[in-house]
Image 1 (cartoon, rainbow, N blue to C red):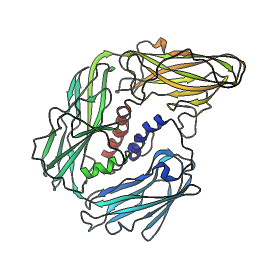
Image 2: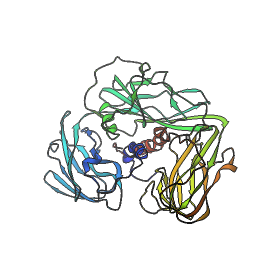
Image 3: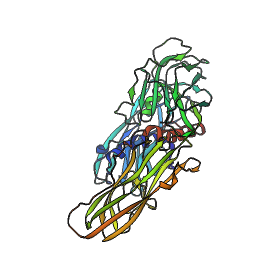
Image 4: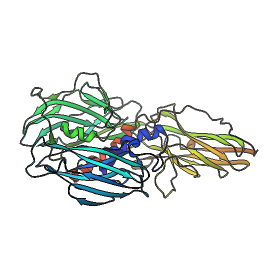
Length: 507
């Protein structure tokens, strides 16, 4: 995991799918900030609660070069204290205006500015106002964004103990999640946020739950009195697919939010879009029920270190897979540009891909022949020896490390597309090499002998225009499938682990 602050994980994960699908890059200072849809999350704080963070975010990692952010705090000054947070900013204060200079010319990031927010003594529930953030980048333009800061009533939800569960291939495992109210005020409404992965997916699709790429969110209108505790009903659980790598174990996370805190949290995930599709099964219930009651507006949790439950699901068996490297033979004239499609085929029986802690991810190492130049590179590939900023799809290298996103079913292929300019006549050779590796280190698949394949370039004298042939064929799989399950366990898992150690909220 990249060692950036955990509060950026959700926003970073939310845009990975869009970047891979679009397969395009946006040059620095190419468009006004409005064209890249900057946004700032809201923040709800309690007088007796912790501080929160307002972060001005970009949906993609990019550099705006040198820019300034002017923060007008006048609408919230009477009830909230807003100060400069962590980051690479240099700020000055004049009255209720903070002006921050940021230099991101040498570092691409999606976190433009972070502000720390806390309630002032004497603030009252329901007070709210907008921070006004004006971004100016020389040669690019100026635009304004708003973040709503409000005062909420403090409550204290506490999740039940961590769960260590056992199952079997194809079986279902119940997940007895619980939550208690440890505070002195009744909690009106709750949201349960759960992560899973392909190797352990929720069995039902409840009508009061949304199912998105980053997990599942279930909304409850129930009120929870001080000292009371409830659990999800007995229908709540997960299924272990029959084609999972075994033996294996999976980590998941369950986190309880107040409704207002959930809106604050999910606002960083494409705020203009729904979190996910609603289910159609009967609603998930909390038992014992105390009767559905109207939700009270503006409640925020005053202790986030006890809101999560980690869920570990273990299962035995002996089911692995054979991933076979796929090379290619390409023919063309010197000076022409030819397509190259390489990767691996999953011969089964298990799915290929890093689903679970013991199932390997098949890193695909591509070594191009010395007599060609990569002019177009799959966005799923990076140069492992490039010391500069992380740039998927950067052309011009000879060595590439490629990763399929999601899991690959038996009989399907993970494919990485290149376009190569032929610079030299003659027959030249490169290779495709699979390196299966799980969390504990290198892993062998069922047939290591086919984990390497050749790339052969047969070129003749000069020509004009593009062309070439590609004898090796095969349909590309939908590699975006499974993005939420594959990434969210690492991303939100790290977020929630950090939550146990520090008093922060915004991802």
